[in-house]
Image (cartoon, rainbow, N blue to C red; front, side):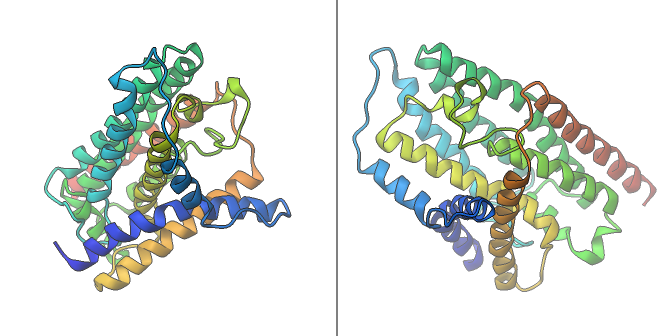
Length: 308
């Protein structure tokens, strides 16, 4: 385990909530306001951990374990997430499958916790989350398989180590660009951002992710907020890897990854400032498009690999 890999983990744990603060600050600037401080998400998490938790009499241990399992799933994905071509803290052949399923397990725990409340309102949000994830998760997994086919490895660290400007063309450059577009859509969907979802909405009938965590309070809600920030960072490293490709110097690669995820946070703030969210009936079309891009990338990478 290298020192840059450990430092990347520490940086993610400390800086991930700041990404949400950057998004909020960017949106405020576009609206002509000063906006909350960048550290506001950290203040919110700390405030929740200082409170006590309240549990409904209708809930069971499933509800209490939901935030813990969700955070654990994101933490596992973080330990596998690549950074600028460097080796992740936990890297092995086939780790891309564990990466995808760890994120899926985190979502599954959140959905179960929402259903355990017995609330029809939270059940509505859980059903929407499950329906959209049925399209977003295959797009992510197929996209990773397309990259694995182009790179000749099933390890995410090895895949993004191949993503250098000089080797992109030899590894199926068009396929990589298609996967980058698909991952951009999946990134917005997985993090409940516009145009898929609006984390700042208060309209009950349009809420997706936020409605599933309404009954959580205190440390449980703080853990959910922290896990959401870490998930933003984890998926952000995948998207940033396409625009800040691998570098030979490990410390330069780490700096490029950190800079890349913060640039991505600014881009998310810009997107949310210039466009509105899609109608719920249109979101599956967007996610199906991402899946189609990943499938096309897999076909192209297999074809280019076969001709090599």
